[in-house]
Structures are given as structure tokens and as C-alpha cells.
Amino acid sequence: MKQILTVLFLIFLNSCGNEEKKADSQNIDYYQFQKVSLAKYDIPASIYLPDASAGIGTSFKPLIEHEIGDYKWKIKVGRYFTLNIEDYGDFKYLFEEKKKEILSNKVYKSSILKEEGAILVYQQTLIEDIGLKRSYTFHIYAVVKLDDVFYQITNSEKGNTKKEIEFMFKSIKSIKKINE
Image (cartoon, rainbow, N blue to C red; front, side, top):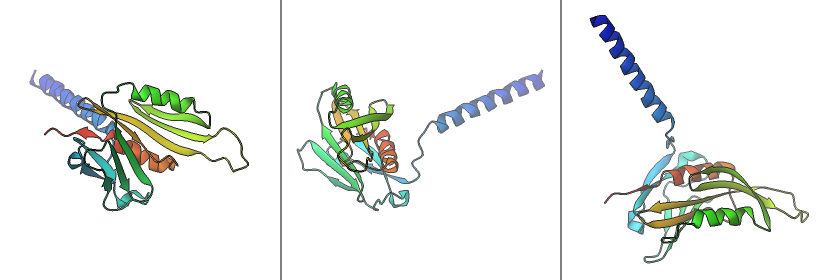
């Protein structure tokens, strides 16, 4: 009887360990990122931003631009990694309206590459051929709700490389409310 209980106990422990591994595999690896608090810039949250080891031209110290009382922020990490943040108050239909706008654009053809929650990764190219080599630009659009405030997050209008957008995606996914 003791042997049966021991075997059952070992099976139970093994199954618990497998569940932990599954939960860990769903987490994003923030190995090349540094945690930054946005609290002193009037956003009650933290974010993970890429560090210099990320290989996307990032600097050691992120630059956060914000004027006290303003509704806009700019987070820069090097030359190419820029996140623009705007406070949209309690406007809860922001994501749906912007997604429609992106897909119905008359100048650019947009293709959604990834949509996860309120984060949209898409590529754009000019609809009309104007004699230039066709090239795609990659973009990210997200809405994050903190308390009862909706924040819109975008990258530069010029677009970024796919690799840079993946780092931005990870950063946006990392935004967590700071409990004061």
C-alpha cells in the first residue's frame, strides 16, 4: 500500500512540474530588455525596453520625452526604436476605429501580420506604383488600458524593420500597472 501511495505521489509531483513548465513557456523572454518605470512621467506603469545587447541600434539609456500636464509621450531607445504614446481618456472604441482606418487607407495597402489582444502588427506598401521600388514598412498599433485611461501606442510613421517591431511588440506586452 505504501508503494502505491508513493508512486501516486510521484506521478502527482511530476504532473505539477509539467504544468509549471507549460506556464513558463508561455511567458516572453525579456533577456535583452531592462525594466523602466513610467511613474515619474505620469503613467502608472512599468515597461521593459530593449538594451544595447538587442542588436537593433539601441542605446544604454532610454530617453522619455514628456511635458508635465501634456497627453503625449515619446520613448526613444537609440535611433530607430521609438514608441509614441497618447492619452485618450475613456475612449474605449479606440482600437476598433484605428484598425478600420488602417485597413481602409486609400494611400497604403495594409496587411495585418499579428493581432493579439489590443496590439496590431501590420505592414504597409503604397497602393499606387509611382515608379519607386516597392518596399514594405512595418508598423505597430496598440491600446493599453491603465485604470480607466486608454493609451494609444504607435511607432514612427516612417515604419521600422520587422525585427524592431518585434522588440516593440515585446515592450508593449510588458506594460504592467504599478500598484502604488
